[in-house]
Image (cartoon, rainbow, N blue to C red; front, side, top):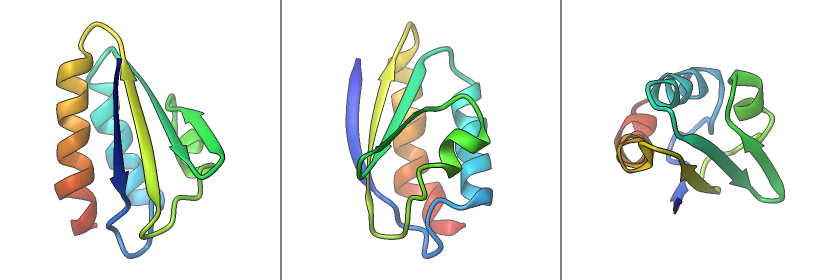
Length: 88
């Protein structure tokens, strides 16, 4: 299991466009991904689970990755949260 924390860099937060991009990243891997923002936690299986977190700009998101390709999935999520999301 790999756990990391990130700050939402997108000025609009984790809205529909970055949530869709995040889902594309996650779906490429077999590992299970759980996101936690404030007291809201979601196992990412679809767009609604991501949007239900209501993650706003500047908020911290805890990411937990667990499964057979967790190292690769965590690396892809790291790139997403540190690079991709700030451009959306």
